Image (tube, rainbow, N blue to C red):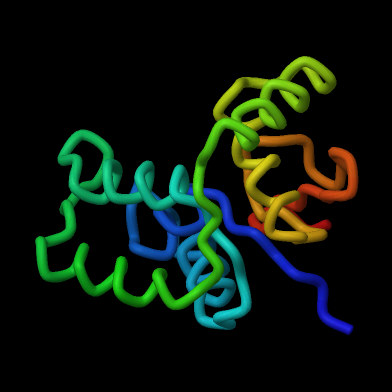
Length: 141
């Protein structure tokens, strides 16, 4: 049985060639996105769009057509909406694990989507946060 996975913003940004990604990170991220069996949240999509259009965060920001193509592709997957219940769950994660609120909201989205794995480089690699295990796809686990 395959585990359901949730992707953090940084994975998408590296897949799009951003944030000064080295080739190995970009290839790993593109492989994850290429599998096509992942979940996201509206928060992840918003952060992703903000970064890939930003000349301070991307050596070459994506064109409007490229941004639209990414969004069209990503909208095919499970996308968790942000609502008050998700915010409350994020506050629980923030307080329980002493992490940044925005990382906690990613965890809450992963939990809501019933993902067992969150791919992110922002949280502790291999740690469980409730039923969600965080794995850094850019490290050997």
